[in-house]
Structure formats: C-alpha cells, structure tokens
Picture 1 (cartoon, one colour):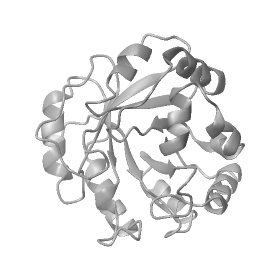
Picture 2 (picture 1 turned 30 degrees about the horizontal axis):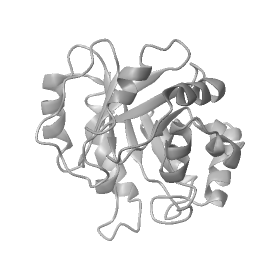
Picture 3 (picture 1 turned 45 degrees about the horizontal axis):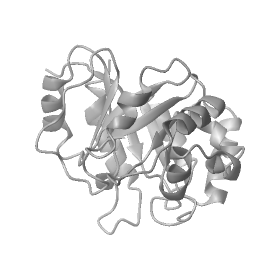
Picture 4 (picture 1 turned 180 degrees about the vertical axis):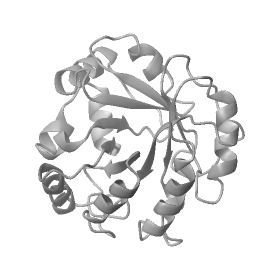
Length: 242
C-alpha cells in the first residue's frame, strides 16, 4: 500500500503545443498538481519554453479566477543574472512573473558564478518569504541551499535532481533533509513512477515531499506536452498524496 508522502506533483514543460486553458481541466481533476513553466530569455516560443503571448494568456486565465498552482522554472541568462544579484528576470517578465506561486532556479548541473549577498537580496526584495524558491541539488550547485537555508528573509527548499535535464533516473535517491519538504526529480515517468516512489519513500523520512517530471511527459520527438501522459502520471501520484 502506498505511503502518503506527496504534498504535490509538479508536471513541467507546458508550452505552445497546448492551449493554456487545457491546464485548468487537469487542475480540476487533480487539485494537487503544480504546473512548472520553463522560462528563458533566449528560448521563448521553442519546445518546452512558451512564448510571451502564451504566458500572457496564462496570466489572463489566472487573473480570471482559475485555480492553477504554478511554479516558474528560470533558466539560462536570467538565472546567471539572479545569481549575481541582478533583477533582469523580474523586469523583463513584469508583471507576468507575479502569477507564479514559487520559483525554481535551473542550474542544469553547470557551475554558476555567484554573489551570495546579491542573490539573497534580489530574492528577498522580489519574493520575500511569501514565494518559495526551489534550488536544484545537482551535485554541482548544492552549496546554494546550505548557504541560504538559514535566512528568515527567503523561503528555500531543495530539489534533488542530478539528471541535468536529460530525464535519467539516478542510481539512488538522496535522503530528505529533516524538517524540510524536499523535491525529487530525474527520469520520472508514468511507466516508472510507482516503483520510483517506493524507492523515494524509503529515504523520505517522515516528512512530506514533492516530485517533478518533465522529459517523459512529452511526445517521443519532444514537440508536444502530452496531456494524456500527464494524466497518467497524476493518476499514479494521486495514491501517494497526503
């Protein structure tokens, strides 16, 4: 019997291959779902990365009262700027960035130059402790969480993800940080989720966690965010929701 450990399940990569309104029906059927939206200054409108027009449509749906839980997964130039204390992301995507409930800094297992003081300030100034910040524990940038986790000005949580966006399941899952709602990602799919959640459950401790899937929710050619796969994934996850 599944042990109920999931606070939420994030499905990442909704893009121009689907209508933003399609997300509403999924959220109605699976209230625990969070939609992770990939955000990049230089890749807007490509596979996985929605255009500004798509984001504006999504923002309009949220403003009209749709009950969507969204996380903004910030990539590339915007992440590098934030790490140095810059606020280009918040300026470039204003006001649409405000529709997101929390934000993930996607490091993609690449080393980043950082000003910890500047990073803390830009996150505190724009997000405060009201919007959570997800920090990838990818084996390269793990220090971000340990350096920022004691701050009362921002709310940070770790996402264990060593796949670097390649959609590969790790050899083993790390133990959760005691007292912290940790995230687990990397190669999760509708085909392996049941087995992988059993393994994650063994290291999750007594606290709640969340999971995130991306690559294996798409069509084989990567062109489409496959809503049928998303539904299959969420049907399996539902048995583990607290």
